Length: 253
Ligand code: FPP
Image 1 (cartoon, rainbow, N blue to C red):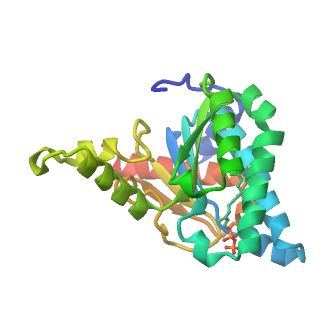
Image 2: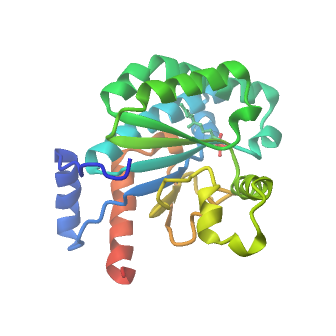
Image 3: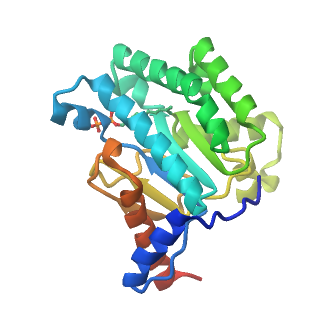
């Protein structure tokens, strides 16, 4: 899973021509993290039921995964259900979200396979209902030989919870204090084997990380946009990548 061929596609050329007008050398981040915020506001604005906003969010995710693969992004990690969501959503909404994830992973599995998507899971999904876990593991298994883009779904994920679970694993392995270092801790995180995100995007207008990739975000560039997640398409991702490219030009090592 270390190397993916960089896709030199029309999508990338499009991005390059846009960048060309702004004299920026384009740098496509290898790993992008996304906090997909704004589904409910998107639905509310249109007078749709909340569930329709989440459905539109799932469609946006499919579009962005596709586009990201075409321009050469290797890892896309998306915050789909946080450890806080158990408290901040009603039981009905949680069921809607679980139902949606199940439906998408069943109905869109073939398409994901055709698109070369590998599925990664981060977060403590032991707390999810068995049928949802089975669907997740099945999709992961079916997609495991692909190598175009890795889509990491953060489910029942919280950065602090991830670090605590890592500490518990280290303690259970009876590792002595002097052997504990950053590398060892990183190896016990859910993101083991996944490079740290180069760019983290948050849609929906808020400018905070809300417990997303707490350990891994240390050197990430952060990009915030008012666009609501269902409206976040390739054009919006282009803007984020242009921003990232400018950061790389100004501060790159
Ligand atoms: C945040 O918007 C959205 C979520 C917490 C859910 C994200 C889920 C999806 C995009 C669907 C994922 C589908 C798959 C297959 C993984 P919000 O509900 O907080 O919106 P608001 O800020 O407008 O209230």
